[in-house]
Each structure stands twice: as structure tokens, then as C-alpha cells.
Image 1 (cartoon, rainbow, N blue to C red):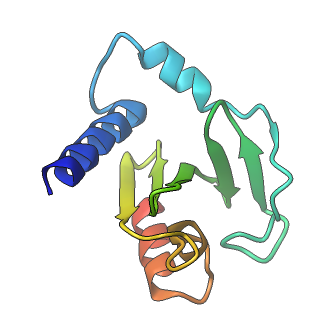
Image 2 (image 1 turned 90 degrees about the vertical axis):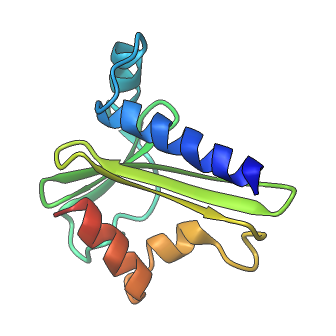
Length: 130
């Protein structure tokens, strides 16, 4: 349990630093990593069904634009059976970290977070875009 608490705490600190709520010597580098570098090649229908939504890549981050909102996110999984999702909206200074103690084939938090028909997805995107 201590390892999971430490991981969650560290991820929340990292998220807070990327949002700008915690000041560090790496602020400029973190902000630079959020800049749009190129189109991601991901489908442009995440969270919206029209052409106002775009998927872009920063440095280690994906950026979803949707009707003037920008959500910066990343996800990952490990061979040991964990998967995670982190997202934030720099304008609203809101973010979320979700950790799953299971293989992505059992519960894939990334797919759930972008499912347009799921209550959890609605909760996540509602929180980020308030």
C-alpha cells in the first residue's frame, strides 16, 4: 500500500507542477513540452463528432483541442499489470490522475476516459472543461 500511495502522491505533484500550481526550476521545460508539435494521427472524433476537435503531440504529451478547450494528457501501462492516465486543462488548472492495478486488457483506463458513452468519461471531461 505504501508504494501505491507514494506513486499517487508523486504523480499528483508532477501534475501540479505541469499545471503551474507548484513552481520548480523546470517550469520553462515543462511548459515547452506542452506545445503542439504535430498532428497525432489519432482520430479527430474524441469527445466530439465534428471537425472542431483535434489531436496533437507535444513532447511526451498528447493535446486534445475541443471547442477552444485544450486538455493535455498521457497514459501508460506496465508489464506487471498496471495502467494509468493523467490529464489536465491548463486554462482551468484542473487535472486528474487515475491509477489501475490491473492489466489494460482487463480495464483500460485510457479507453474508458475517451469513451463517449461512459459515465466515467463524462465525469472526467466535465471536470477538466469546467
